[in-house]
Amino acid sequence: MEVTHMVRSKEPTGLFMMSESVASVLACPDCREKLVVSEIRCDCTKCGRSFPVVEGVPFLLPQGSAMFADRSDNLFRRMDGEYRHTPGWIKSAKTILSGGLHFGQKHFDTIVQKSASSGIILNVGGGPTRERPQFTNLNISNFPNVDVVGDAHMLPVLSNSVAGVVCCAVLEHVREPIRCVNEMLRVLMPGGHVYIEIPFMQHFHGYPDDYQRWTLHGLRYLMRMFQEVEAGVILGPGASLIEVFDSYLTLPFKNQIAIYAIKGFLRVCLLPVKYLDIIMAKTPAAHTLASGLFFLGQKVR
Ligand SMILES: [Zn+2]
Image 1 (tube, rainbow, N blue to C red):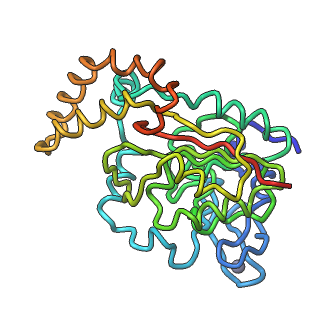
Image 2: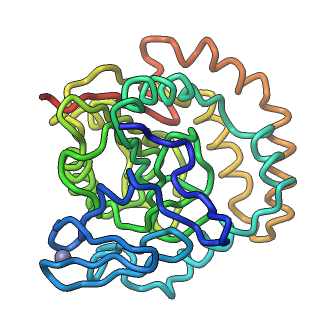
């Protein structure tokens, strides 16, 4: 199956079009029936639900969506606002002064290599950035670069239909991670690869809420229905240390400018700690103090 780099494209008429490959795997989130897709809506012929398509993005939330039934939630609004309206210069500063070195780029390349020629790579929780052009981003709201709006607890995708699944920094925010992992297993083709990133030693970050952390052993247990290819540290112990410092020292402050100033100053001072992770993150015990962990696995044929 040929997968185009643009999962949505703008027609000369100004209309956004969903790619055919994405349309072909969409299912009703409630009854899992294959959806009948048009430019303006998706219809379920089994349970009778109809879902809107806005600028090429299908909105496929299940009835009484487990997490986001209450869309007036303040944290949800904050996430929505920040995802949509963070100025470019703040994003650039955040990247330069980020609290840690992320070792995940090679894993994104691996999953693209292993999956892109055979079908869709579904990025559960993807957006507002697109980590790789081959990723189809699914999220709970129509942020920039989101291709399908859906809930990770009830993926609006046909069983055994996607070649790869990616899910980064999402499972700590869902109420029932095991349900989400079961959904990833269901939609993945036999032999397909899954790539997960989760936090370990990270402060509470509620977007829209924050429910749990995993050790490396806990992550392996959570993903036990997949055959492990590789698992380990994605953000090292230095990143944990920086997080603790800046979360602790900004605890008394509410003013965003003061918080940015303190974090910026600290992160400049702690740059050596950040770069020491090039060595520290590769030590055998690094996972016991890591900021983030990963799991790359395969659905057994
Ligand atoms: Zn249905």
